[in-house]
Length: 87
Image (cartoon, rainbow, N blue to C red):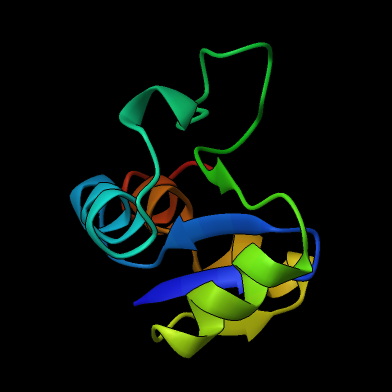
């Protein structure tokens, strides 16, 4: 599932591949806009949706709007960390 918080962070609850597919095929975003853990010190992989119009488009296309805390809790990389025993 694709989720987005009110700050415009677009992430997947299942996989990086799911996120890229939604961002590129549904939102017409470029792959180079992806911000991962190694990019400029960001702590979580995501795409930024700049502006309410893009956020509303994502929701209209099926993304679930959640709080920033819930986004971090449900994101695919957080699930992976838990599976590997990391916190």
